[in-house]
Length: 277
Image (cartoon, rainbow, N blue to C red):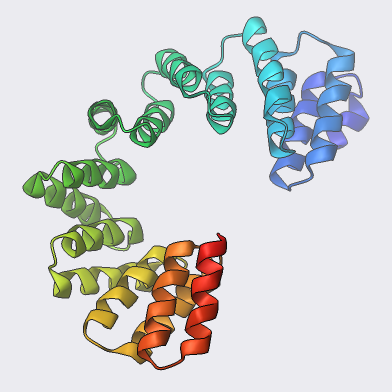
């Protein structure tokens, strides 16, 4: 704002203020600053890019895509391609999103961001081989990229390559022994193989480092229910539902635990809520 008082016709100053307002979740004000910048100079690529971000935050992905396209026509920027990919992904246009992430990666070959986003999208599209290749490439670029180890470990888990999966989870935890995501993923690995003790230990570690992980509460509750520790299981399911109150699986599991506790009316309500989701 001080810069704008000194130079009120500098479009980049409006763009910078728009970025700050976006970070402060002042989305409409951010969009207004972008419009002011573009009135001063319609060829300011950064203003079109920032305008797209504001529109995306306001829940207008189609309009955001048009702004990103204008930005890209003025200056090919990996950020614009990556943001365009995110908007297309939100609209279910996965092929276009993949193309945009690829363009972003080509313009910024040392950056793991677009490459990792493409890998996650490929996972969602059930392209495990493509995702595996992307995460491996990300790790070659940055061997300390923790989440890439965990995601790749989960892919190896799904492919039943147990040693490779455990090696990746261990690599992530060697780099950061507080990484809840890695503990949760390894816990899920053990859980799927009915190795209850290490699974419970890892879910407990995930919750210790990040108690806002609903799936870890749910999975530990499932383990406790197997041991017939119904009160402890109920407490964990309630924590999961506190964080994700409309999850049908959590509600259904909670219903079974309530029924085991003899709380049949509450169980029926939980089942009804699960069916309504």
